Length: 402
Image 1 (tube, rainbow, N blue to C red):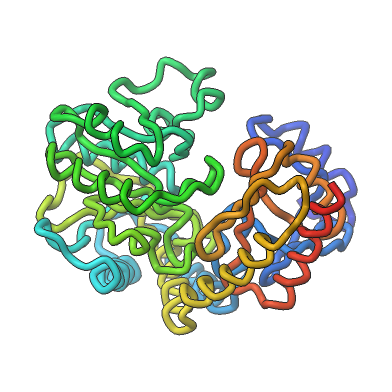
Image 2: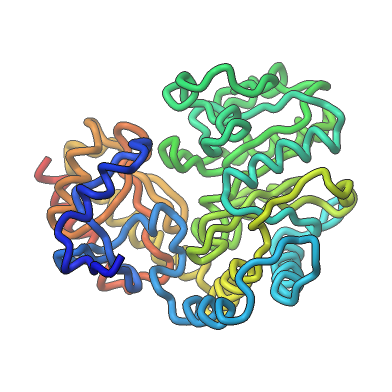
């Protein structure tokens, strides 16, 4: 237990020996992060265009978030929701006030009720339970290419058969419609539908953006049949797309909003938020041991503070336009299309993305796939423009050389 990374050259082997195998590893052992850079045990630096798979909206070891975590860790780390807590109360007030300002109200009121959890997948599970509880219906409609998590309910909402097949049978009552297909809504969503779950920008599915008429039709269809609209903003929420919430690009009013990733600043956290008129749920009907712990709430308060004080969503919008302009200007034959909103970007390729990711790593850039042939770029929203431009230069050179 006393070995440090520099003293023990076999960390990767040790981990591989005991890890589940459920997540593929890259040939690097990351031991430190600072801002938009991560560092391996050999001292090599990588510009992180993955934001830690989406959670590091403010980058790694942000001083305000780190200070909040340190101070709260010395006070009270965990407390279940069976007692009130100062950090939780303040966080709930600050988050719901942000939602009131940014997403407004509907005939069901503002988004005021919050179930706090430890991950985005857990927050999706809560949304499924709540939709069935509030409506008394059982059927859930999601969309092809959508990704909502790997727990059983979230996996049932996820469309990709490769994720689903090893674990079937899954939760009954789920169906998947074509994305951006307005006509399919009229036959696929009906009076037995409890909820429609949608990502307005599909992340894992290839960075596909909802068409305005499709987003409006989803909302109208839910209104017509009495279903609840669940918008999954686990990856898109909190500034990623250049607005506080991606729903704002589409004037879309969710009945239930799901957040995660950036929300906790690196401390595991998810949230399921619903409209005031739907009311509270019965005591004992849902909960989470670690959901709403003081440490996570303190970290999230710091995230919200920095994003508000530095207008991080607007920064993401400005930098995102710059990145998309550079990507769209590429004449690399391997590039089919560049697309995205804010700093959530995808480059669709004419070949598999894995060799591209390896080449980028060799040159000090850490990026993500989004399916077999899409290069996904999710840089920290606080990334310095020189770092961003350096990384983009590498990306464009690798694509041109492919």
